[in-house]
Image (cartoon, rainbow, N blue to C red; front, side):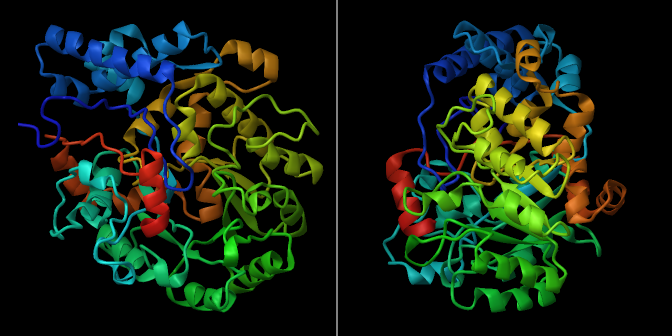
Length: 487
């Protein structure tokens, strides 16, 4: 008996309107609706042919392959031909063939993950009747440890985070990041993050979970707090939001305040600056969400690494081939800054895919342009895997979609984009991140091969129970509530 969704009403590849809370949810379009509908039809038909229930079929590799094939069919019907999921028809029915295509043994290093402390002190600072992360009530992740009116927050807590990331996906290690907030309103504190890291690790020296230190250098006390974060919490990077600040006014990394942060990080021996770029919070201080400052500081601080979280991507902005000087928003603001400052591919600027790839999965033309440009201008060695989960539930569907995505021959020839080879996939999935984060794949494999997570996963795979849920806001009402109480 399946604990979650026993009737098989949820698809394993989740194409829906869920946001990470940093942008307003955008409804899926007619093409996506068609793809989802076709996937449901195929699930019923193919499960019957295999003598399985819908749930059994959808949990299998064939279920994922069949869903991707349905998405391909919908895209082709609507003449979206920039890219496709490279899955064979036989994989819809043959488990070995399906696993060979949607499964894999790559080293997967997810550099952007999140969770919420469902019992944290942040809840004491909001009204008792407030419903942070409204919409979660429908998720029924069944974690349910906290109970009460806010028991649904357990869906975003430690236990569900560990299950979704390390049991229900192929993720090997993750970096736990932070949302834009003041120290007083953090839904996850540095103490929470460190406790989760220790729970996940179990074995001394294990690095399944690494953590950032959140810093907003334009807020009183945050620059000074960098010293304590670096000294006491074994952080792997500083994370900042240039569009965030007092009164909604942001900053540029190339401003005095941004440079003060970079130079302090350098003195503290923390070489990674992770900066949210793209996915703008709104019209106020919009320019600070764009990437004009990236090339400037990359040139001025060649010994520092700049990890551009979301790669400047703007949800709802159609990506096109880069044209120098065209002034387009989105990923092009990052590329233009690199070009203007003569930052060569595979230098000290890294493009991260959290939320970006999740949104690009909707549209293969958009995906082909965005990925093609990043691989060409940032470099094959400098595109990093990130998923922004737990907001999107388990990242396994994002992994399976990227494993099989291919830029079409037409777009490769017209725009000079590279084919996404197995080598490029291995790099993006994990090998690239080992450089700025300073950890070798072999070290991680050795540390995690026999830890408690590996042991639990081996037993769990005998009867996997993925819930195929997403947790972030899915409509404007949920998004505004998220901003008010949760974001």
